[in-house]
Length: 158
Length: 293
Image (cartoon, rainbow over all chains, first blue to last red; front, side, top):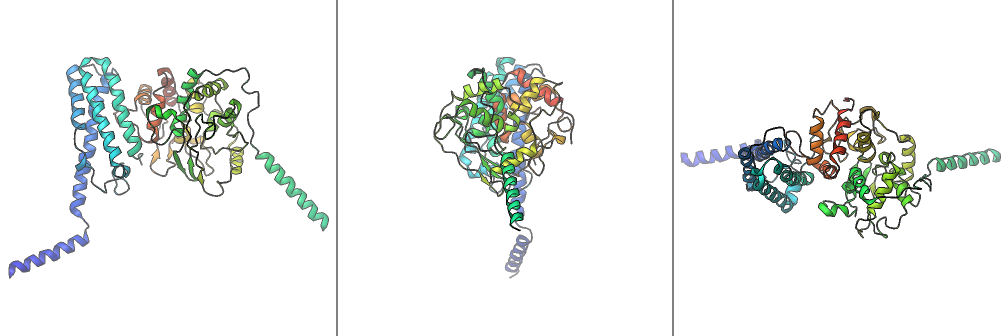
């Protein structure tokens, strides 16, 4: 019964492996999930930066570029968040994140704040082509949604 | 022997009397606000600059709800947890029954109407530098705010900090209030930063007695909650332009479009309601800080 024997061996090996290095598969997945989740916030910062630069007059206004950036914000804000926030990926459990446990403990509040981002991004996208003067007033509400969520759910830098 | 004992008792009694005298709570003089009349419109600006809502609004309050000063936010510290009291206009649970001079003594001296010391989590050491007219305006404005019947919760402090009289000793050791930076940079910026907005309360480290370490003014400090740190904002830590700082105070966006979080998010909400001139004055003050590690 070579097949059964190797199966048993494999099982023993798997058990030993699992004992020696706890949940390596999950750790690997955490890393990717974390990268994706932090990447989405970099996308948000990058695109707000395009619009903020124009709003502050640091970069010349360009309707097409502004609209593209605003549309990107709408797109990112429409992403479903589930896969990016696995249980145990808060700042009390792992390094490399400032995500507070409150995100999981009061998930409804977190998701409602994420929805607020989408709403504010939509407001920005509706006026982004209307000229430089329209950007500042529409960026304000979007910035408020960032602050509101960071105030409740992001830990200070360590 | 009897005479010696008598002398000892006398000395102890004298010591206690001196102690009680030194640790008494001294309110403002009754006539400190004479001749001033408060303007509630101007008071709103003082209210925002002084950040009253950031601590005294209910936990998580947003928008108009930030004007209901119901208290209840918790502030962890090495001495225990302070719980912001109700300072709304409710006569029973807030400060609605106070007189203006009682309010002024609370804000500028840290003395309650019944002659107790407040803990310096209430930044009266900064507010002590407030202009009397601003105090009168603030009182006029706060009288227009809604009442909340939420009862104030007692602080949860460790012994001996739980003894209020210990605050008197702290006040003595802390010394009289004074400006830290010279007025040369911008008088209005210094006034906003050091007196009203009390920025140093978080951005400056403290010694073991909880006094601000002026040698490291605005150089950053551990977060009193124990989690993370409050960043330094002297040129040694912060290389933003004055425009960047003013824009951050208005919008919460850093130069690379990260956004403010934690308690600073609430501070930005206040700062956003100041005038552009005031934000520029604060930025000029920050740019003029001496670099400190």
